[in-house]
Length: 447
Image (cartoon, rainbow, N blue to C red; front, side, top):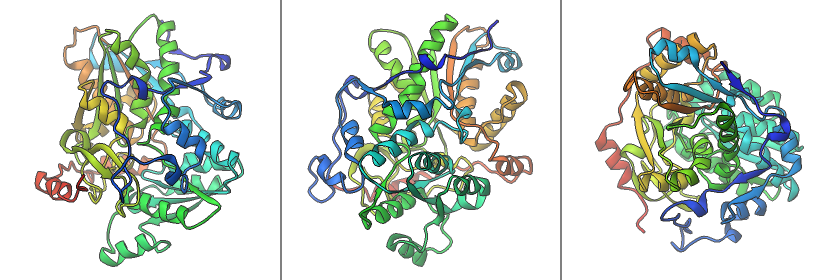
C-alpha cells in the first residue's frame, strides 16, 4: 500500500505545458483600454519583461524551463503525490483521494513555481527591482524568496485585511529581504485617493495591483510581477499537473475528478490543464473549480472584458468578473478574494469543461480540520476549499470507487490565527448580495 509517490530530481519536467493552443474556442486577446484594440507586447513592456510577454502570447505547446530556474525549483520539486487513506477511512468512502502537496515549498505554497521564473526573466533583462501585490501573503512571500535568489529588490503591497490578519507572512517577507506596506497605502496616488474616500477600507487585490503597477510604471529600474490570472503564470504552474500525471501513472491510477480552489485560477489550472489534451481525446474527466461564496466570480460574475485592478490601469482581460471595483468581505482565505478569474480558466468554464462551485467559509474550515486530524497536515484557508470540494465528491455516493485528485496548494502553519478565530466562533459565512454584484457589474467597460 503506497502512501506517497516521489519522483527523482531527474524526473522533474524540463518543459512547461502551454494550454492556450488547445483551448476549444480559443482566448480573446487583451485589449488596450484607450483604443479598445488588441494590445501588443510593446505597450506591456513598460511593466513586464519581454521574456514573460513572449510566453504570455505564445502558441507553442511546450516551452523549455531554463536550467537556472530548474536548479532553484529542485529545492522542493518534484513535490509528493499523496494518497489520503486516513481521510478516505474517516469518510467511509470507496473513493480514492489523492493530493498533490505543494505545501512543501520554502514558503509553504505553490506560488514559487511562478515567482522563480518571473524573477529570473526580469534579472536576465537587467531589472533591479520588482513590485507586486499579495492577498493572503503567499505570493508576496514567494516573490520575496525568488527576488532574493536573483539579487533583486522587492516591494510588496499587501491587502490591508491580510496585513492585519497574518503578521507572520510579513515576517517571512522581511526575512527574505522585501519591503512590505499595507494596501491601500500612502505610497501611491491610488492609495492616497482611496484612503481619503474610505479610510477604513479592508483593501482588495484590485487596489493592491493598482498600487504595485503605479509604483513600477514610475521607475526605470522596476517591473511588476503578478502571482495569478495571466497566461504565463498558469504556464509556470503547469509543472504541478505534469508531475502529477507521471505520479498517477506510477500509482496505476487515473483521476475521474480534478479539484482545486480558485481565486485568480493559477493553482487549480496548474494541476488541471495538463490533463486537458486527454479530455479532448475522449477521457472522461471532471474538472471542479471551488471558489468562496463571498467572492463568486465564476458562479455569479459575468464573462466580459474588464480591468484587473481598481485604478483601471491594466489591459482589459476577457474573464469572469464581479467588476473591477468589487470589494469582497475580509474572509480568511485572502488568496481567493479577487474580482476576476484567469482568462484560461474563464474560457474553460465558458466551454463547460470546468465546473465551478461556490462554498461557504465555515464548511471549508471544518473540512480543513478533518484533513489535519486524519492526514496530519494543517491546510491554508484557501486549500480548505479544495479539500471540502474533494469531500463533497467522495461522499456523493459512498460506494462509488471514483478517483479524486486535488491540489493541496499550501499549508496553514502561518494561518493559525484564522483557526483560532474559527474555534472561537468569530468567523461567519457571507453571501454577497446579488444586488451589490449587479451594482459592481454596472461599471464594466463598454466594449
